[in-house]
Length: 128
Image: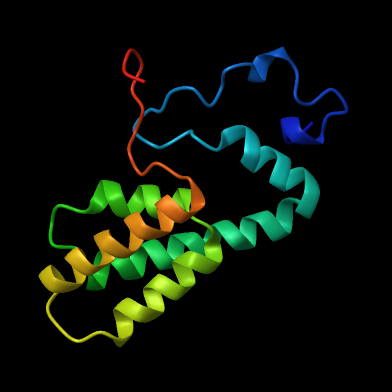
């Protein structure tokens, strides 16, 4: 089987507690993402993920002040895709240096995260 989510027994006990902690790359949505693959299909999910990668690349090129990599990665991974599109469009329409856009991006991401009930922080084992 290519993906666990395509198995008739998904989610099995292997997925108990899978979203509790993060590593370098966030795992907060592992189970939800696998459910999404199951619903929309592998190819459509991959297209969506590639759009997230493109958005992240544009953020890193045009808005990064050298200290926002983690925030941008978390936002690109956890926020709803439509929110990411809207935030990127607002940032690209904005004038100013990367430092100004970086602060603006951080505020827009935090606002979107609060609206969506998402935390843009990694959760390390031992710290809730």
